[in-house]
Image (cartoon, rainbow, N blue to C red; front, side, top):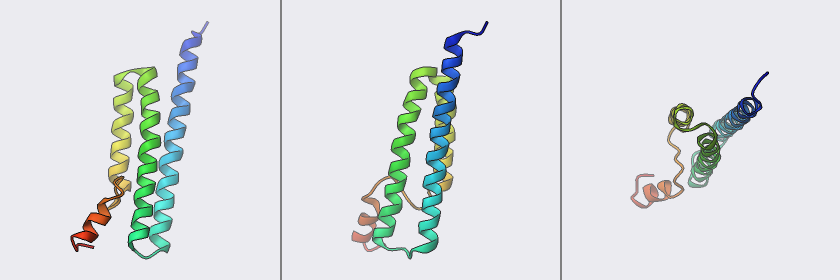
Length: 109
């Protein structure tokens, strides 16, 4: 007979994985669509940063859930995957909404 807590924790990991996947794919698709259809301007860059911040918040919350249930080894694997994904998919965007404003203020943008 299977241990019920093992089944429960497997479902929790599956649900957290699905939430992470939906979040990163949706945000990446929205960023790609925005980059393809809108010219770069300060409001567009701010929108891209907003999407990065949204992705960071949702992923951070779900990583906290994974850490709560599975402890550090599983959390570390998921954290590494999220960080690598964000490094590849964010491009010039950041989760800091003030970064483009600071570049504009310095005359770099």
